[in-house]
Length: 131
Image 1: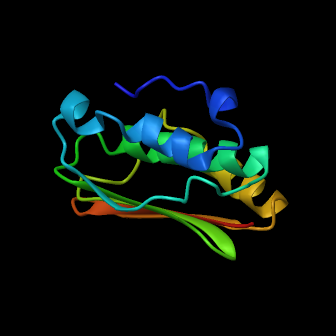
Image 2: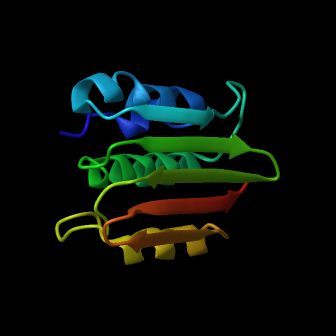
Image 3: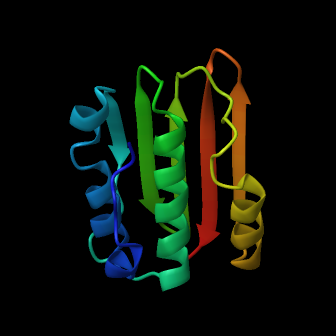
């Protein structure tokens, strides 16, 4: 079951939102979570960027609930980059968030969204947005 998060509460604080989503994820799902990078605490980002990153992260985690391991990296520099990879059965199942909506929103914000999956070998979700 995906954790509940008040995305509006985290608006403007990407790190706080990411930490809220990831806190206890491994314990709740019994899936090891590798965190490769977190955004700086002082990253000033538009609310729409923070909201999209958190929604994509939540969707990717939820979709990976049958994985054995999940890795997450969120970086902020000239762009905001989110990468979530898992070794689950892939690809996403029906009922997950509409991936085309993520792509359209990312494009409207000047960025891009990609999801690649190989049945039986997991999936990787990538989001890149301008800062």
